[in-house]
Image (cartoon, rainbow, N blue to C red; front, side):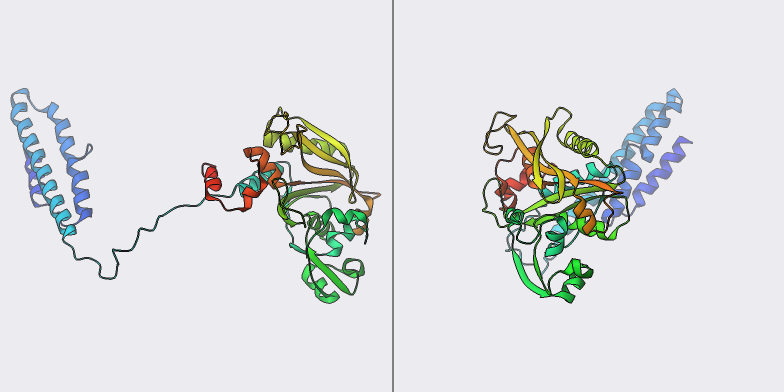
Length: 363
């Protein structure tokens, strides 16, 4: 039985066609591999009577050498044929090599997605809106009266006015209150609170949304400020919402993003669209509270503002402030990224310096 198997395998190895790479690979796996047919015969050697084992073993070794020789010869012939193949006349071999360098995610995109994942775990869905806004959604509906000093804090970039009808069509504003003057001024939005207004105007209650996006303000560019930056804002409106709910949301977010032992404080502040209002500070993670240029040597870094939605804002959006209440917050993605990755200059995010961006490839 063993002799018949050896004879049959010898015939197969001798007549096998090895005229292409696929056939070569199949031959190697079938006859020379650790789980190949030759290996099976070697395993069966233990069943051969002792007086025949030596002769059968010599036959198997000779067959293995024959198979290996056939494979090596065919492989060398294939490599020689490839070396002698005519060059591609359509390819210029004097051209420089084009490096196949893969890019990576921008650190701001990484932080934005991580922030949204944290809020998604407690039920906040994402809403987005236009970057070019009208005065109603950017200021008036958020309780910034015309010529009010609070508008000076958000000095921005205005674009050419459009007609009342065009403004309503472009921005989705409806009614006289939404369109205001006949020539409606448009501007680059100064905060993503504009999306809060749009959500309150169009979506059913209760509302639990986060609004990420790019915003613009007419500010001098420095290590701590830029004329273009990114925000994530959020809003929750329902019956019986309190400031305690707001604080617990902020605590959860900060501790999920920076760790359970992070220190948080709320400082009383003023925002036209919330009452009461507060600034959110955490321990500066760059200097660990000792003081640096990022925290203005105070040991604390402001990451955003928050407060209870002002009843006037609810009324502007058509929501009954006697029945519903809500909280809102907003924070800059750049500030969060600077703290998370120990970055000391905000300008690095927009300079496109590959030495800086490559540091985030592992993320």
